[in-house]
Each structure stands twice: as C-alpha cells, then as structure tokens.
Image (cartoon, rainbow, N blue to C red; front, side, top):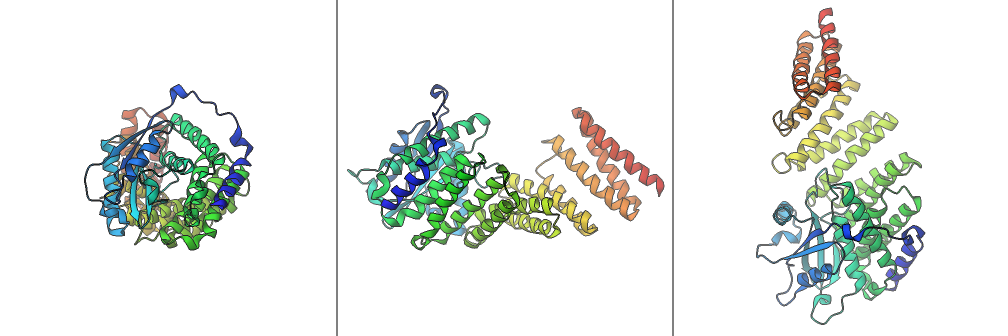
Length: 454
C-alpha cells in the first residue's frame, strides 16, 4: 500500500514537535491491563492469541488472554444485541480490573477488531475511540508462519492506548507519552504498505484517532490540520467502506476534532463550534437511533452541550431549544434502568436548560418540566448517598419556585420555594459549607421579603 507509506511519512515526519526528545521516567510507568477476548474465528485459527502475543511486546501493557467459553452472537453488531455486547464487556473489564478490552470477529477474509473501556458511553469517558470503531486486518496474517507487519502491531497498540480512559493527571500524561512514541514509530515504519487498498479507510481512521488523542488539547492549528487530513483521506476512499457504521464513526471523529479545536484553539471558536455541530449531525445519519442507539445517544449528548455553548455565545433561543431536544434524544437511550448514573447526569443538564428556557419564555409549564427533571436526578443523587449534591438540587428547585412565585405574585409558590431552601440549608449547615449557607440564607431572606409584600 504505497499510498499509506506516503501519507504516514507526509503527515508525521513533517511535524517537528514529534521529534522532540521523549522524557519520561520509565521506572515509574503505569501498567495498563488489556484483555484480549478469544476471537470469533475459524476453529483452526489462533488470531486472538497472536494479537495478545503481539501486544505483550509493547511498553506499559499487561495483556491477558480471556478464552472462557460464552456466546458471542452480539459481535455481529445487530442493534438488538448491542447492549448485551456492552454489558458483557463491562462485566469482563470489572471482574479482571482491566483498562481496555479487545474483541475480534471474522468477516469473510478479514478480522474486525474493536476496543472497549469501562467508561464507554458514560459522561466520564475521555477516550475518542468508540466501540463501533473497527480496525480490519487480513485473517491470513494470523496463520502459522505468516509475518505480522510491525506497523500493524503498532496501529493496534495505538488503538489500545487510545481506548484507555485516564482517571487522573498521571495516567493522562503517560497516555500522551505512549501515543507520542507510537506516532514516532509509525512515521519511521512503512511495513504496512503490503496491505491491500481496501484497508486504507480503516487505517486512516485509526491513525486519525491516534493523532487526535495525542494532540486534541495542544491548541496547534497544524495538528488539527493533520488530523483532518487523515479523516478526509479515509472519506475520499469511502467507496471501499461496506458498512455505513464505519462512515458514521469517521464523521463522529471530525465532530470531536472541531469540538476540541473550538475549546483549545483561540482562533474563530464560533466556526469550530458550527463545524462540530455539522459533523456530529452528519454522523447521526449513519449511526442512527435504531441501528446504533448508544453512539447516536452519545452524540446527541455532545450536540446538546454544543448547542448550549452556541446559545451562550449568540443568545439564540432556538439553539437552547435544540440543546433540550438533543438531551431528550439521549434520555430515550440512556435510561434509568440501564445507565442510571449517566441518566441522572442527563436529567441534571435537562433541568438546568429547561429552567433557563422556562425563564426566557416565561413558561410555567417548561419550568415545571425542569423541576421534574431535577427530581428525577434525585432518584440517583439521594440525600443519603450524596447529601451536598442533593442539597444543591433542592436549592435549584427552590430558585425555580421563587421566580415562578415572584412573577405570578403567587404565595403558595413562594412558600414552596422556602421549603426547598430550608431543606438545602439544613444539609449545608450539617456539612459546614459556609459559602452555600450564605447563598441559601440570602435566598430565604429574599423569598420571605416577597411573601411579606403579598
């Protein structure tokens, strides 16, 4: 694949910042645990074991091969079985205390490889790679006696590192250190050129994810151009992509790219915001709510916050309505029964946005919806488990009732506000939260004053 060789050399070797000395205390390296689940493949093939063996050679990985027998029908990516796939993967990750899980599934003469982490499809997922992102390798490369190209092994290594969800600053620093080394290795290795052209879109997509995961917060325009060129190259060869899911993943990453560049690059942030919205919405045409509900819902969650940013910058009420709509879409998929924590986060965001929309439109009905969402959030954020957050919600509900009561000069609504403010005050006093005590005490005084006027 001569084209791949040229692209890698052009995109990576031209970037001088990647050639800097890599300074890191190797004795302090964290070992990330990776589980390779036995692949769905021909009986005589050892493809999963071979991939695990290749990854064991890589720095900072502790690789386990999981060959327990269980049904893997969900790996055909049928929408009806996607939750079973996510749930089974989460169970293995939790039981083995792993950072990343690798699935493998044979499609004709190819092996499809996918990556999963414990926080995938959660608010706290800080990885750019999706479970639906697929990397393909020729199935015959895993047969006895075949030479496995080092560049392919490094691409798989890059996919694993991209899937790691950093839980602290130290983990994040090491993840970037490893990605930088992988990019440097890929820039010096053309062994993947033997791959047929049909693999190009998947190689370019994974290269784009690797570079985006490394460079997303550097604020460098040149980095963002490199990432965009990688994804654009994948799209230029979309005629080689048989499954529309893979197209949706590429557009999703372009949305992530512009979301990141808008946050970290000071130049023309509104343009980055518009592009992020555009690409995410385009991704949803391929990752639909019926065939790929979890990716669709996660993109909806991202879109909601982008529309909210747009509203804050442009004071466009329609953008606020669009934000609410997208959260409602996410809410349909990330339900209380299946994703209680994420559902609770969505309820909190919905409540905040609806309270603003209710205030701007002077709508009591919308404000009541906001209160209902805050109360929904309290099904997870309970007074016993998270008293401080619970009290903050009580204070937020009290503020909605206060504005409703003040505008309508309605005594029962103001009295309702007082009750919620006092609930919050009780908790804040027990927790000795002086700042919050001062704030809610002011709210109580203000509410009492308006009651005295009626």
